[in-house]
Amino acid sequence: MLIFNNKADLISHLSTYKNNKSTIGFVPTMGALHKGHLSLLEKSFQENIITVISIFVNPTQFNNQEDLKKYPRTLEADVEKIKTVSDAIIVFAPSVDEMYDGNTESAHFSFDGLEYQMEGSHRPGHFDGVGTIVKKLFEIVKPTNAYFGEKDFQQLQIVKKLVQKTGMPINIVGCPISREENGLAMSSRNGRLTDEEKNKAAFIYKTLKEAREKFVNESIEAVKKYVYDAFSTHPEFKMDYFEIAAEDDLVPANTKDNKEYRGFIAVFLSNVRLIDNISLN
Ligand code: AMP
Image (cartoon, rainbow, N blue to C red; front, side):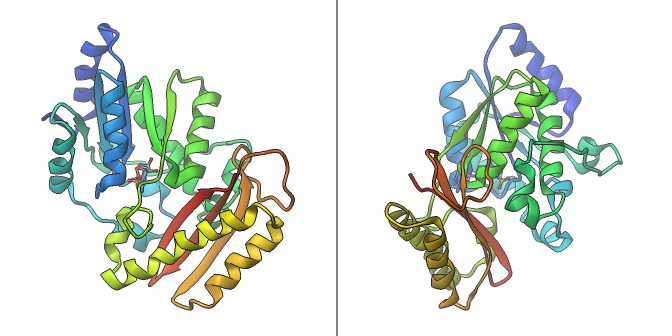
């Protein structure tokens, strides 16, 4: 299995494939891999001649230094999991210096307003950090197709906007959310929850599914009230936000139009911030 830490070596290796016009699939991650990440890898592996996965905990997208410090780093175990998909997958695991060259700063992006909503307003600077690292990685890997999870739906829309605005010829593929049996969306942060907390966290998806049912006949205001009331009876959670927004502009909606809507939630459980979302149409 090929593991690169150095971007020049990876670029040189990939250039041989590019000359053959092979398609390159790319799955950017921050590691601590779980089945959600592997589902993206499997899709890329099926749809492309070569697949590259990056494993890089990107400091500029963390607005909370404690969260960055605690983020799990498990490269050896990650490599073993990647091998279960295929040992032909190429791993790129650079250092912070390799990616940022001593200047760990974000560039500033306009994503036509997508960046101001939800995760954008609750995590200042987050999407500038995401835009910075995704652009750097795309310039190195130059993929044909890049795979992103709907788990981070706002990020998926922002990456589509990044590609559109920069004119990079990359097809962005959205992939469905992988869940635990109890419905909890898989996340590297779930490793910080005890088994009991993971059981409690099933309440998040259960409530989102109830919101979807209510959305058929009830107003947006009533659905939002239902969700906030449900969480207020479970004091172990601290609500960050629940919003209903159209998928295209992500602006929190008050009235229903002829659009595709999603419910978006961020809650804290024992100081671990969990996000999830659900299609409401
Ligand atoms: P991360 O390592 O958390 O930055 O995630 C890397 C990629 O995996 C992103 O595109 C995520 O949206 C995606 N991802 C994370 N968790 C899941 C999940 N439960 N289901 C599907 N995709 C996921």
